[in-house]
Length: 313
Image (cartoon, rainbow, N blue to C red; front, top):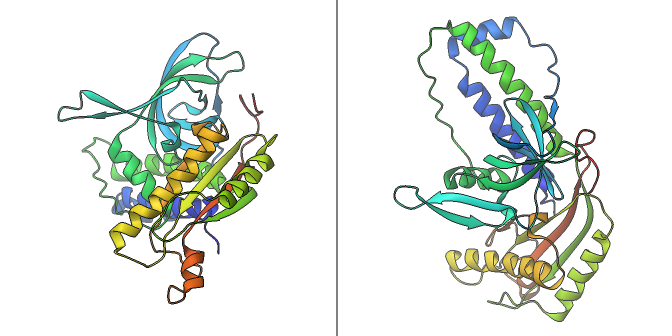
């Protein structure tokens, strides 16, 4: 069964392509088709002066260990996350409150505002990362690769001609597409599958042993990330099984963080898939046992190199 971050990255590219095409005025498309775009260079890696306070707003285009790469108007910023980095989203009726999250929600495709201080190597040390909960929902749908996301893009009135507006949007969108393409370049360094009893999310000794071996295999791997997916068999109602699959993914994450000291920022958006993506027949006891599982992968982004923070700190 293939269920990986690479597949989700391909889903992201399909979505962004649809957003790009949908955002360009129809009248501008024939003109652009007659004048194909030359190859667009990737945005530059931007350095932040040491000790300087900075705020950047942009889109997370990749994660690599304790680093995330944020595409802002000025280029790509390499942001370093630590245990003290605050991750928040406005909440409440007037958005005056803040709900705190861990760094696992910082996934590619999420729009963020980062406040931090420049490091000696040009990276931005993040004090706070802020995002909108609505943007997280969209990013999670892209990440799972199992949702159809429709975008209703409204273009503001402008004094520019339609063709000029479309040309400018295509330039920007093409550069973003090129950078997002690098998300395909993840390699799997280790995998583990752990199974559960019916209706349970408790990790067995055998499951813990498999996770221990997975963690040992990640030791010394630069920039690793861990992806966790939970699943359920078809016993019981759909909603119950969805929650159970979420709990199984969460239990794996809790064990990795609390018992194996894996930093939460190294874990990519743990997700439950309910009864979907079965690997065994739900008509047999052995098949249902196979489906009551969590799949864990150690991933490394091989598509990012060079620039500030290219090496593991």
